[in-house]
Length: 100
Image 1 (cartoon, rainbow, N blue to C red):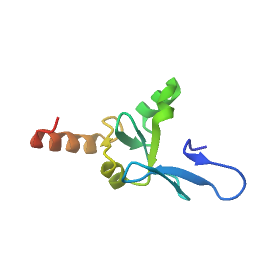
Image 2 (image 1 turned 180 degrees about the vertical axis):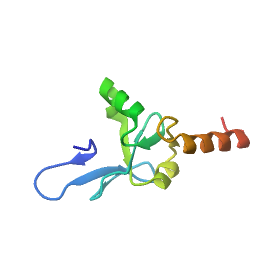
Image 3 (image 1 turned 135 degrees about the horizontal axis):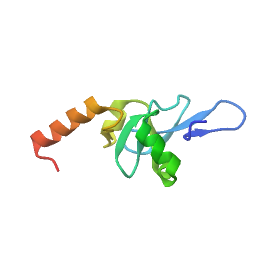
């Protein structure tokens, strides 16, 4: 079961994070997972995130996004482990603008 899934009889709903960073209900599961405090996003099968979830409290701050554009608009950065090309672009953009 997807951690963002709420159950019971009837159609399943999923709690996703919108561009404003606020949760909303959706009939469609999230395509990407992230961490609210770490402000990052990545694939649902990311080995780094799966290890963190297995350790414990990481899941408390887990968020899900419908797509990459929403994750970026919500202020999250790509994961260096499972999205290395996107992370390299993000990092280069930050260095070129002098953003800390």
